[in-house]
Length: 256
Ligand code: PEP
Image (tube, rainbow, N blue to C red; front, top):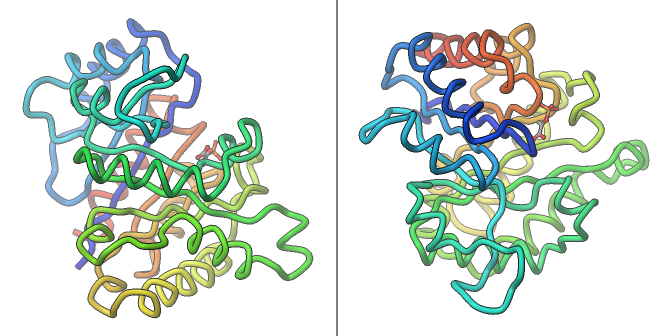
């Protein structure tokens, strides 16, 4: 059984002190539960205060929103995997569509980031997804296959065991227009088949595939209903305490 997984991507929101206050309130609101994994991904500048607000043995994990593939060196403005580990991160989001479109990240860059993350003990959360034009042109599956191939090439089954894939249709991100559960399930199935074909059925049955794109307290229950969807990558709704706590609580109870 794959445990439900909820990731909150704060993007470029919340200062270090706002992060600490938010997490303190969230911890009061949410009981610890072994029924779902929860990750918060604040901006780099809030990681330290988020870590201390979470406390030393928190059931909520810390993730970063990006990572550079080199461990150190002359890469002004970048942050490396060992730096993130040192700050208590266990996860890192790679290949978010905003990184791909606004910062020109290519699958080749994403592949290097995944390798660096794995080498330094971070679990990558790989985002893939098609644009509206690509969906309308019937290219959804081929676009996602290209992204998966380019990002995951050469990884072993052991590597894949710590990777999560997030299906995030670009047209659903921040638009209020979530994919229907049926649309998400169809893509999730094709991603799982891609993993089975490229690796093996055991890896395909254990890898977690999340949905992301305008997830809210109102649609999370329907999105989590099918087995094919293992959780959610949440943007806008994770910035609000009530919304995020409700999403997590539903994930904790729905498959318990
Ligand atoms: C995201 O940016 O990963 C995301 C899913 O955003 P939103 O939930 O706001 O659509």
